[in-house]
Amino acid sequence: MRKPSILKIDIFRKHATTNTKINFLTNNLMEHKIAIYRHHTTKMHSLPLTPKRKQTEWTLIKLIAQNNNFPQKLTQNLNLQLQHKETNQVQINRKNKNKKMDNFHILQSKNKENHKPIQAH
Image (tube, rainbow, N blue to C red; front, top):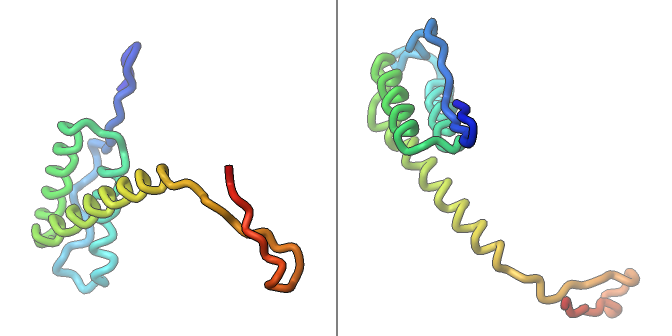
């Protein structure tokens, strides 16, 4: 959604689409069944949605899962895993941002004796 000074992001879904995905009771591979919900949940977490829009999307994902006999616990666990992964990635990025390179080695020849550490400034 676009306003003169603000750009808001939302997930667009066609009105004509149905909520039918791979039913949990089918003989399809479990990886294929889970992939659908992983895709939707990852998209929800990766876009900069407002908390209200994110909650609306999560409610829709749960509704689609329910309509396809997908156990609610599996979708919740998938969501928690992705949230945990996202939180860990943010923490790793913060740690790496503050790291400085102290020294490194330049190879001058094939002999290991000629490796000299160079101090970074």
